[in-house]
Image 1: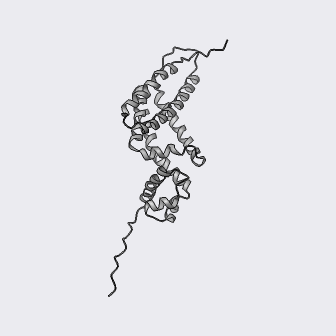
Image 2: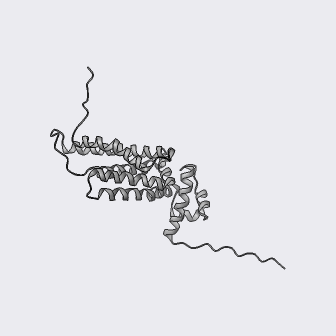
Length: 221
């Protein structure tokens, strides 16, 4: 008498949004662990337990899948920064809340953070990361452009102040990212301590810059 074979498990049918989410979850595991170029669609399909052809039904290429994954995990950051900027609180409070929101995301999404910053030198993803950096700079500039400043330096125009804030925001964005990378190697440091450090570093100098104060450029004698 022939042995009765167990029936094959029935694969659960998912809606298109749920299937995309499943693929993105698998892609996060593979991309964050192996990097953009080392990762393959075959490996991501195996991680998700689906066919490679099914991935291509939702994402035309590996580059498109990687870009969708980056955008998925940066949306939360920018929403948190936008919420901080939209409050009526003083600029210092808004900036602190924005820095804390970013570092909280780093703390709770270590794989996504690793994904964002491990491949920033790759040509295939550099353009997207540059756009994300520009968004971060604009968001930070919104956080620190708050209450009217005292007219202590009448020779400094509004445009010069605006440009100074934008340049400061660019520097701050890069320095906070660098601090977050350092935090990965020093996990025992509390998030509150990092936020305090950023505010000590950034806000004290920013208040003087926003007021029009500058370091005097000395000409060599």
